[in-house]
Length: 435
Image (cartoon, rainbow, N blue to C red):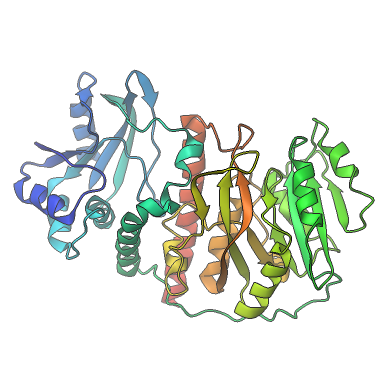
């Protein structure tokens, strides 16, 4: 067995070179710049499972230094280019050679990503949930700090290649969608309000007042309201919400003791009889960037004739000082290919606005993570998503963010769920293309 040390972001030429030199039943590719050492008989175990399972590629749980670092199962929707296999990828040499021979693009960064996608068409990518080796992951940033890597402008050249590789993969497997969309009748339904700002919350006493204030301060040419859905807060959040009840535009929904999560709170707002024609997102710890955001949303819906609109936000600290990478505008989105690339990236952007009649049919999944991504994927399967490229929203990063300091189990749980969402969506799109 030959071993090749190849970085995750490598060229197509590097992959082809490894394939030419590979020999034996399996070939090991190691993607970390640090030393690799095996648990006793760890390599033998990985080879054994790869052989017994008929894996086209196998990977395993491992140690980061002396700390266990479990990874997750691969599935068809695991299309993220940053999917964490750990440093060791054990390829069946015949699959490696066949995939490399089929690679016709000349990527500078997406070579290994294309290899993985092609190999996944040849056989299973098998996860061995056993701690088989030691490595050191040199990226020690928190989960919150890694969250915006794929939209960091400094990574734009990388992302262009990754999108191309993913798009070609979707075309090969029948999951790519042409830019043909269903039209929406925005006048459908009878609405007292043109728009509703929806703020789901739980235990946000320190921030909910700022969010409500920024929503009520909006200037519009139409009637709108603000729907705050509290999910059994225990820290004084409700008192802050009630301090705004003198404003007739504020609607306060107190959830019962059953399970709702963020998705269920959104559904409560959407199905409220006073919900507006367009439901606009505002997280309970964030604020709108100016007083024209609601008007911008509605204008975009009307002008672009779409079922969902996604705006642009800025990363800031709690005091609204800008933090890197600053402005996040999701320029990777295009009308022609955005809904295909949406299966690769980990989110569609913010703030988000939805056409209420459609969301009342689809509903949000009752989850506390990925619920917005799930409905975004479902919407763009059939409908156009509009974009606003001007900053509308300040995304405040602080210790209370739900995604700021996640442990590896929580990160894995979140990634597994989003991969599952992508898998279901990919299956639906493949079926749609067969109709």
